[in-house]
Length: 410
Image (cartoon, rainbow, N blue to C red; front, side, top):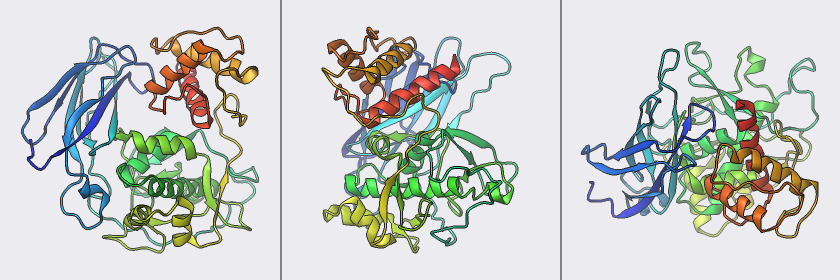
């Protein structure tokens, strides 16, 4: 093991049946150090398809929080996953940051003809890999013609983003359908580090959401005759890596902010919030390393965004999230709450528990009692939310997201 790895981070492997959310219990997981081939952990998944969080060596935290430090700021590990009746999956390059928690999803297709395992060699993090600069674009863009796909006066959060894995003109590159929130988490974990100050993470996540929603709302690529929403080429858009490691700390921020975007008075669209690393590439928008430096100085997320995009910008929330059965009503549900919103959550949790048996079944009586609190807490643990036992905005939509995914699979 690299002698400079003096800190520790944690890695969990979450194993599911192919691309659907059904967990695979009892899967065998081996984690190894790619530099030496040494096996550092061998574990099995629990009833939720998850391993324990494994404590693993990681580089000094200073490398990932201060601009100008030399050396890769995260450790990489190889992971091999196998299960009875399933193809074996090899993942190279799972990332572990010091003091942080990493979650690596692993989709195992069944054995047999017609199912092909997709072994993954994850690319370097965007802040560490080869730099790529985007051509400047206008913050506010022309809207599509009335016969286009945009029919609502306000932006909505789409259920899916179609990501083209290459340059726009590369017809051989595949398209991936990715749920919106999962896409934002993937991009944020590809673009910034979870060791950064929380307000800096928030500022970057808001820029990523606004960038994405501008592409959606203006039909940027559809208007050019393409059949996708955005590319993963950083010469044009944002870094996205199919199957990449997700940092729990960044995921929590995305869960809280995924309907919020940056805009200005007098425009209907989310601002096209260009950004760059600010170290190797300069641009007219947010500097990623600059935002972290401001976070270290105590700046809040909105102040950071105003420094780069102007004092007139403000945050706005989309009122509609596509693909969810019922929108969040605004009330935090907790012990003593009653009504249809509670009954909705109870019914959805019971449906989810058929696939995730660690979540206990509860009476769908519309009363938020101790049993409902326990079921919510277990759900939050399994899906990497703060374990409050209450249903707030982030928890409501994560329950809805999992419920819809499980329902679509049934």
